[in-house]
Image (tube, rainbow, N blue to C red; front, side, top):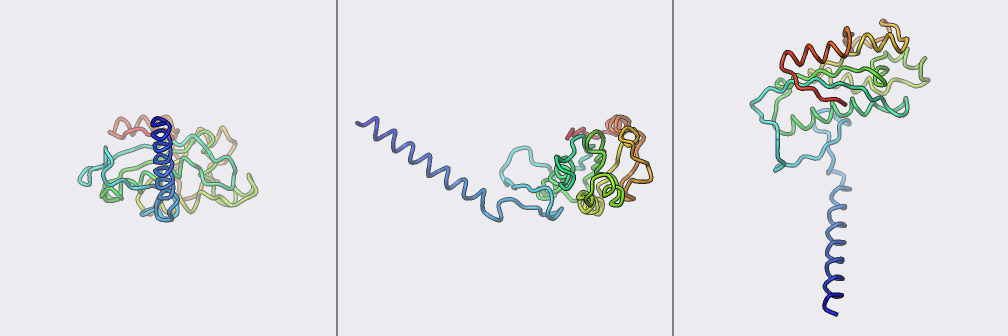
Length: 186
């Protein structure tokens, strides 16, 4: 009988703990977008390990290769760049110390298209452009692989003016790594 009561008490305690924990995750202020507003949801952990240091400069090249499942959705890879910005700034790192470059290729290539050409290709406005605008205002460079543009039969003059045309994602990543950038594949 004691083992049954102990088991029931343990299960009840675990269930109560889960419901309290789940309730906080559902709270409207649990997920925030403090810097890149409305993009890159994050939950800040003040005592989390491996927090960026405010006095350091962070150089990261993001290799964006995954596009959205639907053309009317923001690229999840681009949204993760926004999450990185939000996490670093929430940790106290000023935007001026973030040297971030995001280069799109593969199925993420279309995120770089201007609105008119994106609409022709997919029948909807380019949902990535508002995020690209916000990231650019925060000093983040958004680039697209010239080789991927050609592979997708996208003309170079279809690229949104806020996006930099690079020779290739391969050369962008390796050139920046040689300059001390860390690679973050997304």
